[in-house]
Length: 338
Image (cartoon, rainbow, N blue to C red; front, side, top):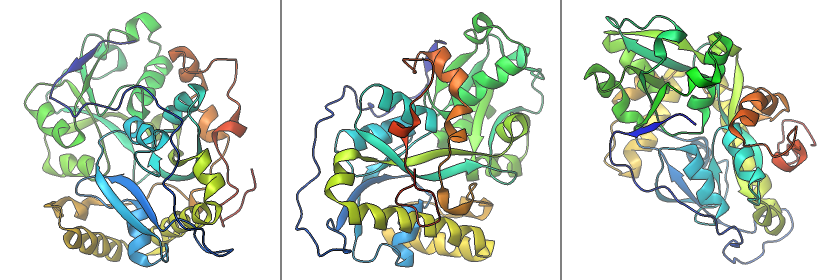
């Protein structure tokens, strides 16, 4: 593994894995009605997640979301779901594989983010940086939100494509930093490269003084980045709530895809201003795309794209991933029965 350098004090990630927790007991509803009427989750500052949008649009019906705090990393978010500290969590597909392969009783049920020509993961340097090629990254500091997730997978896979050896890739130093601090750390010279995405990326580009080294869509084409997971005991105990949750997220994806951009931004602004978390809505103007298509359906390709990297990292025990353990489209109204 590459050396990971701490840059700022981060909230301690959940460690260890008490994986036998059960969902909180609730009264069982009538057939076709959700059995559990409250879902605990972690949000992200200054942004609106698909479940939050779905609730605001009324797609969750009687089910209410209970915010328990914010997360800055997918691996931490799905660990919280696996250990019953939340009811659902979302992360990069590779992080989900790693967690399931480690024995966590979770299953992916619907994709929630991805990369396309409008929304993608980009790696940026300052305009006057001498870094121009993959080889120039040897010995340099690259800021990512967490190690072992989407940004590291994209970086390592691109470096391999560009001809760097495993030994050379290990010399590229990952710096774990909260996403909201990455742009400023790049400008201050604390980082040589900053991995940016979404509205944080668009803000940096609009401000100027940075240029793109590469991005994931340019390297691999459009792809689904990660799913929401539920515990398998949750799915078994609350099948109707599961169906409603997946359906609501899928419908929210379609709403974002088909609604005029200005209306999406206005809705996001209203949601953030209404929840009273002392957030900034200024960056919402940079929103462009949900990044995924067709109701968040999951496919084998979402995982096989990263299989070489997962093997190199030692996250896969055998030669291949048993995808039947990883995901299901059973509850998605937009198709698919796996």
